[in-house]
Length: 132
Image (cartoon, rainbow, N blue to C red; front, side, top):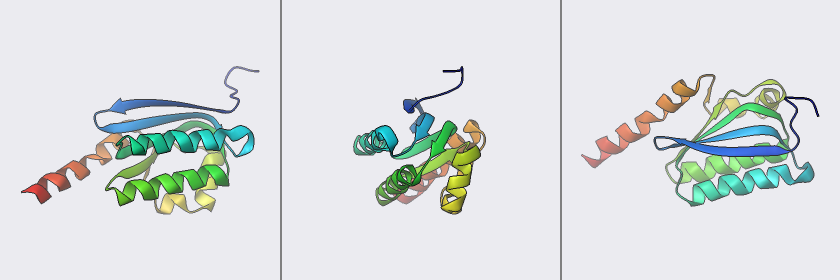
């Protein structure tokens, strides 16, 4: 295997304030259960109370309809609970697939992590206003 080549899907999770960042590396396809792993991971995050999710797609090389379906299900689950899901750096084939499914018409997508993180802030401001 050459440097930079990924097999399967690697998921790492980090936090920035109250935003959970999910870094995806490799591919999310139905083959070999990568999408199932992806779905379980996102499901656990939502179940554990994560309400602001940022999916970092910069190192995701491939996604198929099963992966897109998981993103859609997570988006709907979060929206029902007052949460948000946003995308960071979709590239290449992943960007093409998301464009075909018209996901970028619904989900906010950012090229810079700092900009994406800052975009979550109005949610807090809205909560403060509604509490007063």
